[in-house]
Length: 105
Image (cartoon, rainbow, N blue to C red):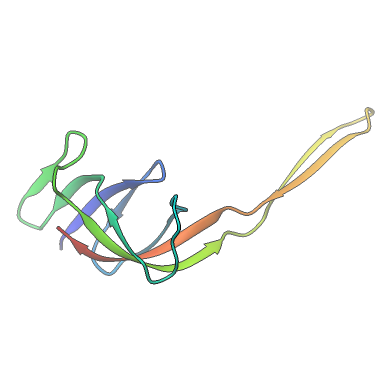
């Protein structure tokens, strides 16, 4: 079973072909169906040998297809101090990209 560890959005993900993962929104103009190439590959294991990068593996790539652009459920943040009439309420919905891993090179 071939797998790789990639870095994107300040996080690391263990992926194999066929996986669907949610990642942080990428900079640039993207739409559903676009091909995305992850070149920050930290580790590749093809079942017989393992290649570990220092910190990244040169010429290693993981290709994926952008399947969905969405937003996570709303998180409500409330700041309150008693007896001082201080009350702040904010909401936040984190955007994400859902990608399907197509290949590991």
